[in-house]
Amino acid sequence: MKKEKGKNAKVIRNNLYACRLLWKLCPGLVIHQALICMFGYLEWLFYSAFFMRYVINALETQQAFSRIMVFLGITIAVFASLSFYTNYVEGKVNPVSKEIVYKKLNLLLYEKSSNVELACFEDNEFYDRYTLALDKATENLIDTVKNIWGVVFGIIASVAAFILMFEVDQWSVLFILFPILGNFVFNQQVAKNEFKRNKETAPYNRKIAYVNRVMYLSDYAKEIRLTNAFALMKRYYAEAIRGIWKVTGKYTVKSMIFHWLYVMFTFSFIFEGLLIYGAYRTIVNHSMNLAQLSVITSMMVSTTWILIGFTDNLTTAFKKGLFVDNLRTFMEYEEKIPENYAGDDPGCEIREIEFRNVSFSYKDEQVIHDLSFRIEGGKTYALVGHNGAGKSTIIKLLLRFYDPTEGVILLNGKDIKTYELAKYRALFATAFQDYQIFSLSVLENVLMHPAKEGDEAVAVQALKLAGVYDKICSLPKGIHTILTKEFAEEGAVLSGGEYQKIVVARAMANPCPVKIYDEPSSALDPIAEYELFKNILKSGKKNTMLFISHRLSSVQKADCVFMLENGTVIESGTHAQLLKQKGSYQQMYEKQAINYLAGAKHEAGIFAMAEEVEA
Image (cartoon, rainbow, N blue to C red; front, side, top):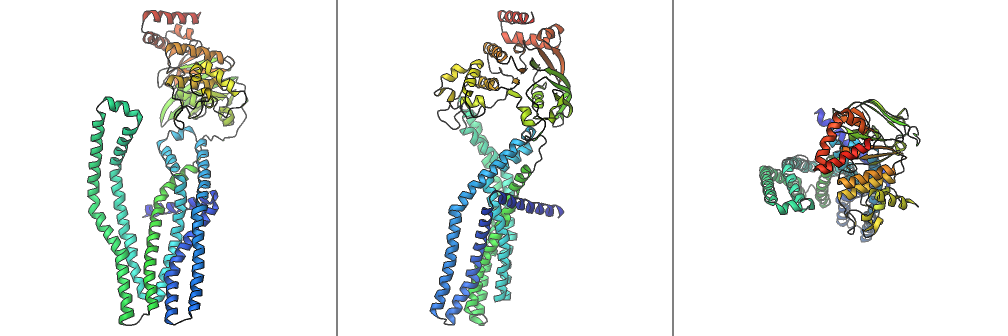
């Protein structure tokens, strides 16, 4: 019982939050929705309880025709005005207001999503809430507030209808019990059955949705045509359909019985029952006049639909509560590393960066363990090691996507947490291994900001150094060609290696003092890799450089190499020094040299290159 009360209280709080939020975004829309809802219920009550009684009484008492026409004229004028207002709101105000809400609400959501820490997007529960909050957010918010007004004015209208019927005939109000039972008992059972059925069919629907995706997405087209995967998908689909049939059959009889009871109690018993009761009072014992009969029969219809509308709005309010709960949870989330964090200005000079006894756990699993190393400004460093050694996590900690669980990261002797986050991150230009190409022009993908005077020349130079400029020149609009076909049919789709070079050019074109390259050559052949690293080093002579790589042939010219294992540094030094130590680095290098070259001639060449670097 307490759990149910707590749930209901939460639904009420969530709906009130939706009202406050929509009021903040567009108060006029909230007012218009309230007025339209109120006028709708008022119209029902006026026509059923007052209009019919007045007209019939006027006819029975033979009032002046002109007086009746004046009443009718005023009624028509008032409700014509209300109809005009309703159509004006629905046709003009609501579409404009909806766009205002869409713009402001999405700006709030996007600002929030850009301000929460990266860990939130790697948390499945949080990410699910975020996507559910975004899904049809404007429509859901407006509908939620509309339902709230439906509940509020539905209660008032139901009470008013009850009082009006009681004034006409005390016993007639008993007939209201029928639609109450129909809506709040039998209709709820129909809804519960539907919920259970949907819950049990959900796994089968997911299978059907998966098959549908596989059959129309281009990603699967080649495998389907080269294999017999279609037969497997067809079997998967048939199993899901059989499962849905089985579940549906399980609930068919119950749903049918409860739906029949809902219809009988909500409509039949009150309509026929109250009509027979009124006819008996009017015709047989003459205890009710025609005007009273008309009021009762009209009120019967009005009360039934008022209760149905109230029930539907109340049910929908609970359903929308889930959306509002996701929205509210997301919007009220307190960021651990807010993007708008204000702190000290780090300046532009990089004297040193230090990891001091840093440990970091991700989902209770320690990824970085008591890590300590130091980077001097203006030098080139490399983080190397096997997959899972913690290389990429170190970069995420350095960029403050995460904060260490223990220890401290220092920039120029100060904890990086003390710096203004935006200015701190502006010190770093990055080329990530898991890069993203945007559906923008090549120029915009390199610059990552609107182009200013002189920026195009910078981008061109970066593309040349990255070794992809000739390919860009061959595109229809050169550097102004849109990448991907997301929005443009004439958009260019490049190879993985070419995209990777554009991302490297992105880091080259950024005038930040620190350049970070995370596996920048993973999609390139050895020759292209050699040329790329040569140009990266050439372009970053004045920068502090940090490479992440598991291919050791690419880090030979670094001033210092940190060999990582299990989230900590096990060896450090120049490439030549680490080879002489004959430790983990030397073993990894030799294994890679043998597998990488696939020939004694090339193997001799790479070792000669290594000896040249050592010298």
